[in-house]
Length: 88
Image (cartoon, rainbow, N blue to C red; front, side):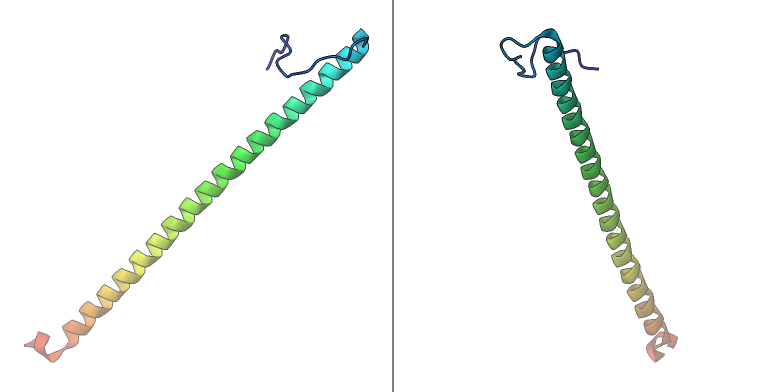
């Protein structure tokens, strides 16, 4: 995945730290970065799912309005057909 040998995480080992302490500190820094990346991926997935859900709701609302409008037009047409002037 990410190979960080240049220390770009901003991690500076403590002066006098031995190799084991430096390695442990580096692992902790790596773990924190991995955790941050997982959190960011999760947040992006959540936002995408929310966006899709809002699109679905908007589409459903539009379909409902269209269906209601078509129902009203059909009812209006039936009522006009039944009037005596239409039998003419």
